[in-house]
Length: 240
Image (tube, rainbow, N blue to C red; front, side, top):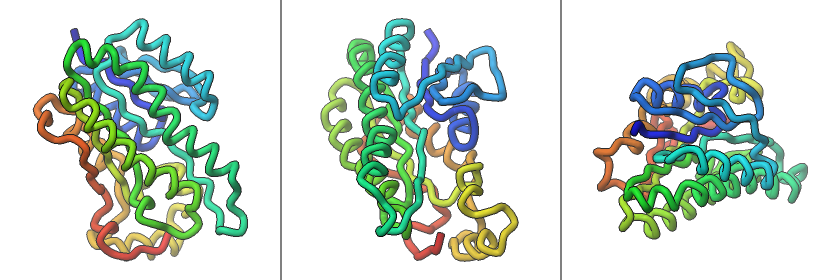
């Protein structure tokens, strides 16, 4: 039986790169997204779901777990909602808590019984360098940083069952979401690239390669860890 991976937000950007890498490795990929991917593959199974909706997420997770022996869960879907302190709202935090934390919990809960039974599972949460702090990121940084504590707790609870739980924390990555905030080709984009120690903004494939390491069967002695894929931005100072 081939590995079966749930990848959230796989319609584009980082999620697509992760899904494509999983497919190239011979895995069946179930994509959870609010929109259908504009690309296809024989082993790509799109599922339309709004992960902001807790009930819809639970229904989708239960359906997938009833039909598939899920071996991998990669929770990548994310939204920034940038605001200074004065404009940030409790609703921002509540909504992003559901998307970044609640949806991850629901998907893992659905897959966990099967993973424990088969004594194998790989869970990877896509956090962010912004968890270390970034201006205008109150809700985003708060909920992405919450992933660290959640993943480490899960790692402790699942280690004896052959399941690993790790995080990948990207820095600035060229995606549509990134360019909604920093227009492509703008002076700010060039300034940001120069401020990153390696001298460039990241690409979705940079993140996908890190996910593939954590998702490998050979990475069974690595759990509860966070890998910053940020070109050195996590050890320096950047202005978004």
